[in-house]
Length: 107
Image 1 (spheres, rainbow, N blue to C red):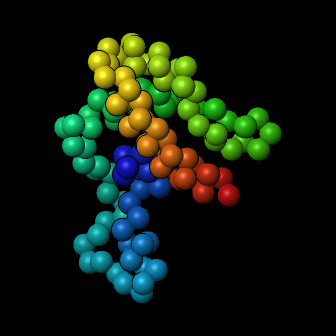
Image 2 (image 1 turned 30 degrees about the vertical axis):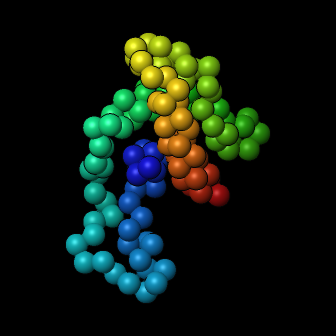
């Protein structure tokens, strides 16, 4: 999900992806801070952002290992999320995308 990549510092990858094929996409702004969130994903994105301080980090390597799910469950309760199962799986999808970026920044 673009929101998770953007949150984690990866930003847009459109021109970087195109460059792998020797292309430049005119008008593609790598520094664009706007990320479109579809209405059906709003609750999941809000919940993910509410958990942004709940990451586990390996104390030896400083590598992000993932979100602390007990804390995610508490956030879902505090936000009054009705369909916790659906939102949790959406958060896990965002977590995987964010981890890809966070780990690449550490390397």
